[in-house]
Length: 186
Image (tube, rainbow, N blue to C red; front, side, top):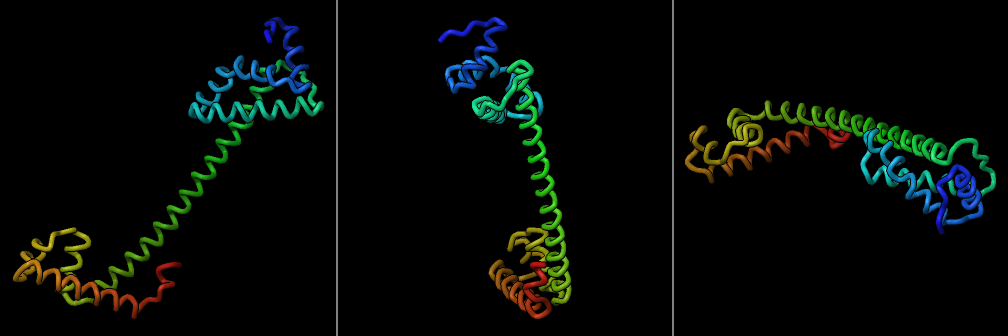
């Protein structure tokens, strides 16, 4: 099917779409693809998002036209463009809400992490000096077992490993004694 490009053909295309002519819809899709997708892309969208928005807009247009309730008072391109704009605004709002929710979750996780670190530091400070140093060197300064053995005068790395294991167990027991699991989850 060949469509004329005159102004009167716009009316013909609209009438065909109202009757459910999918070829007329395909014609519109190809004719306005660049214009509609460019609007999304120039407003922070990707090619894929632009294509999805345009397809959704055409579905909305198709449904309204085939329902018989659409009275077109503008050019088809103007009408579809406004649908694309509205759909893209909604998508941007949705993205913004999701981004804000992620930030809120991040703040909550940061607070939980701060509380967890406070509890661990408090308990580390209740250990004897050697345990405190072993755990600080290993977990916070990320020193190797050889470096810890050298700094603290242990005979070898096996001694440092054994000491770290025992100190870590003491720390775990202290935390379990002083705090409940709920302290870490609230």
